[in-house]
Each structure stands twice: as C-alpha cells, then as structure tokens.
Image 1 (cartoon, helix red, strand yellow):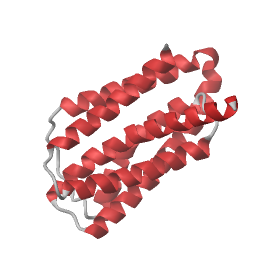
Image 2: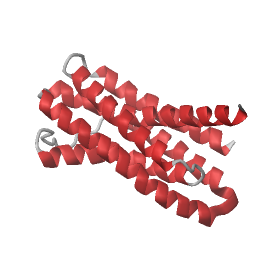
Image 3: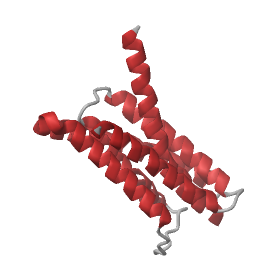
Length: 186
C-alpha cells in the first residue's frame, strides 16, 4: 500500500512537471493561433511538439543519469537548483516583451524551429529528473503526450481568444518548476 502511494505521488509530480512544460507550448501556441493557422498545420505542429517533448527529455534523462553518477550526494541540490533556475527563467521571459524575427510557422522548417524552441526546456528538466528518477518511459511518454495535447489546445484557443492568456501560461509553468526546484533543494 505504501509503495502504491509513492508511485502515485511520483506520477502526480511527473504529470505536474509535464503540464508546466506544456504550458510553454500552450502559451506560444496561442500566439501562433492568433496569427491564423489551418487545422492541418495545428495537427502537424502538435505532432512535432509531442515528438520533441519526448526526445529532448530522453536525451536529458540520459545526460542526467551520468551527471547524477558524477555528483553523488549533491544530486538533489543540483537537480533542484536547475529546476528553480529554469522556472525563474520562464517567469522572467513571461515579463520580457522581445520582438524577434517572425518565422512562418506553416512551413516544415518553421514548425521544426517552433517545436524545438518550445521543447528545449524539456531537455533541462530531463537532466534534473535523470539524476534521481528511474522510470524513463513514464517521463518521456507523459511529457510527449501532455506537450502535444497542450499545444493543440493553445493553437486552437489562439484561433478563438485574445493574446493575454499566453503570457500568464508561461509564467504559471515557471512558477510550478521553480516551486518543484525549491522542494528538491529543501
């Protein structure tokens, strides 16, 4: 019975982290959806995001296992610090209003660039989780499915609503990662 509650607690934690990472795809998807996007592009982009949200943490998990082996006892501090820094960075980015070069999100290179951009945080989280979590299949599957679903929701919602929701989604994801990082440290 105790083993079941630990596993369900780990599952809840992994799903909350997956949602926090998916909020980035959700919020940026709203922005892309506001520009106007066809349903076939929504599907293509969401599939690519799901793929990158699976591959990036997988690579991060492998790297994290190696780093965890090297760090030994300070693994929790390093993993927690990395999550807290990533969360703080996401919060900071939600307040920054940078104007960059616009990318055509309906082309394959544009979709690949967008998918990689919203999934790069998954690599860092994968490194952190790889230091002390063993169930790689659950993590990468959860990250991929949640990232893909949240990107579909963001892209579809962006077609319907105003842009103010996107900024708050990234900030909320950053707060979740920051809090989990602090929990690992303390």
